[in-house]
Image (cartoon, rainbow, N blue to C red; front, side):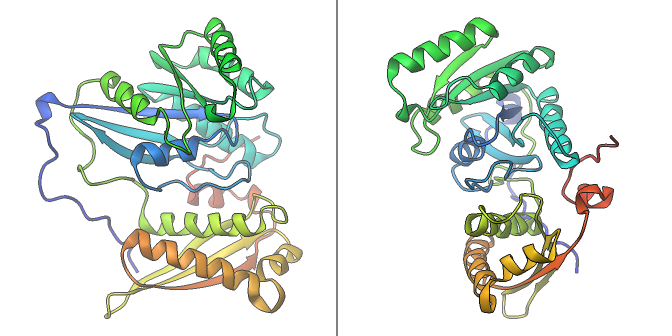
Length: 316
């Protein structure tokens, strides 16, 4: 069955193209600093999954936000850290690649944790990024005393040339509007790349798989390694206006398969119930969701699996 297309707006985006700005903003940072939460806040709705598990974001998720005459293409990247495995290297490479292609790079730092080893390594790596504009975003500032925030901001600005510094709480929304307005004013002049009403560039079946992966991790993040993945195998529009979706959860060992299924199938049923409700809300259609669990040993060394989730396969 062909993959469903996102509806495009029949009317041209406003305002007139001669007055518009449009640019790519890459959000980079260590794992779990709040990049996905921030991109959801900037877009105004959920387009990137959020869990307590590190490295939840694997591929580039692009959210689209409009602010006045400007369109922002916001890129949520995998967390950057010292990679150990092939999948780690692929995700980190993808994050740095997105920064090289961006008009603006925003470095997110968890203000509650302060300047950690990963943050410092990323800060050093920024020196090799071509983007002329780099901004510092301190997140979770509602959890930190003001003197500590000011000291952290000063330290980071002394070590890198940031065009601006923002102190925000992505979860609460504090400071997000100021950041959005600044980004809108500094992306380059040019026509919009997407219709005004489009909020994400991911295919529907990929979004559906990501929603199920989020529910999987929220339910089992302590027991299940992040190498587990979800693929949408079937998407069939039915005559009554609903859609039948079949997805497979792939794990690397049979012991993990048993964890996902749960006693009497209760765990996978709970995951499916939560995922079905959110997918239906996202696509505005009734959903019949069927989940399967299969063992795919060594998928972390299979180039085809990397291609399917949008990552470049590291040869070493």
